[in-house]
Every structure is written in structure tokens, then in C-alpha cells.
Amino acid sequence: MKKVGLVLVATIIALSAFAQSEYPDSPYDRPHTADRKPIALQTIRYADVMWSKKLERMLPLRERMNHPLYFPNNEAGRIGSRYSFTALTISGVNYGYFQAYDAMADGAVPISAADFDSKLGALTDTIQVEQEDGSFSNVYVENKADPSSIKFLIFREEWMLDKQRSVMEPRIMWITFLREYERNGEVRKSLAFKIFYPSAQALYARNEVFNPRSDVAFLTFYDILLKRMFSSFISRESNQFNDREINSYMLGIEQLYEAERLKDNIFRFEHDLWEF
Image (cartoon, rainbow, N blue to C red):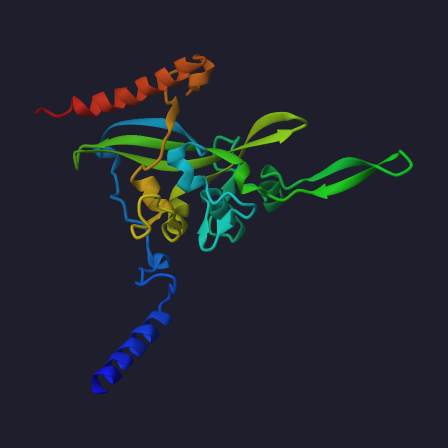
């Protein structure tokens, strides 16, 4: 009887500890993602930059490797405690964590809250509805901002060779959100807004992303961008032609070949610096 009593006490203690867990659907406690902070990157002196190249990189969010950034793809862009990358960015702008800027402007031109919503499709549309007598009347429909309409991200980054540390590394500076939507039976694209990435790193570091490989090895949006765990292609580089886009002088599959050539140039430049 004494052994049975000890077993019952141990079982009750174990069950009570499990019930008090922050994640009752898991047998273990996970670290608090909300406490995570972005890594303090090394300050780079202009005198130490031996070489640099500015690039624009296009990320198709519907590609399989980029799905952790695109989903959850419901109306609110959120399931449980997880947001999509676009939905999290929209929330960050709306709650004042960082500012949204005009994607069409060269510099940092802020946009108002009304313009921000309209660029995401939050407009009032007028549709005609047929009445019983055969006449038509106008009905106003309020469209909400749809995070899933953002189908592409454009990263404006700079690759630098720091001779002080002997390191070649990229730094993402701006992220532009490209919206794709249907209007009057036509598929259209428009630049919605852009953000200054260093100002948004803290928010991205505190929000978890689904890891398709393992539920225990969680990642954040900051981890994905820092470790460059995404699929992309170069769409523009700084050049003597005023940073013209690749699609302005290449067509079809030749654009991808040109993007691969530019990426290979950076690889070869770094590779040729070292002697093996």
C-alpha cells in the first residue's frame, strides 16, 4: 500500500506540473520567443570597405522554399501565435513599431495610414446589383487589406568586403512589398510600400516561423533573413546605366541567366581573393 501511495503522489505531481506548463499540448517548455533580440552586427567603417555592390533581389513568396514567409495565408494572415511575414509587417506599421514609406520614391518618403491601407487594397468598390424590376442599383463594398495579395518581396541590399575582418557579407537595407491582384478580369501588379529593414529587425526577431523540418527547432523571421534561408534571384544591380533592371534589357529565360551571371560574379570575386 505504501508503494502504491508513493506512485499515486508521483503521478499527481507529474500531472500537475504538466497542467501548469505554458504549452499544455507539449510535454516540454519552450524558450520564450518574445524575449529574443536581433544580433548586434559589426559596425563597418567606410575606410575598411574594400569593395561593395548594391543589388535588388526578388523573392517570389509562392515558391516552396519561401512558404514559411507567405503562410499562414488566411484573411487575417495569422493562425494562433503565428503571422505571415506580410501580416506581421502590416501590424508593425499599424501599431507604430516602424514607418512605411512610398515604394515609388527614391528616398524615405513616409506614407499616411489612409494611403497605406489603400495600397493594400482597402478601398471602397462600387458594384451594380440587378433589382427585381430589372433595374440596376449601385452597392458599395468595403474591401479589407489582404496580406495574401503581397506575392513578391524585393530586397535592396549591399554586398561588402570588410578588409578589417576579411569578411564578405550582405546587409539588407530596404524591403519593398509587391502586390498582385485581379481587377476587371486582369491580373495587375503594383508596389505597395517599403520599410527600412534595420528598424524592423526587433519585431521580426520576436515572432516565430513554422519550421517544416522540425517543430522543436523553431526559427524567427529574423533568423530566416539573417541565414538567407529563402529562394530569390537578382533583378537589378548598381551600374553605369542608372541601375537599370534586368528585364529592361533581357527577355524571358535570358533574365534568369543574367541574374545567375551577376550572382556568379560576386562568388568569383570573393573566391579569387583567397589563395588555397
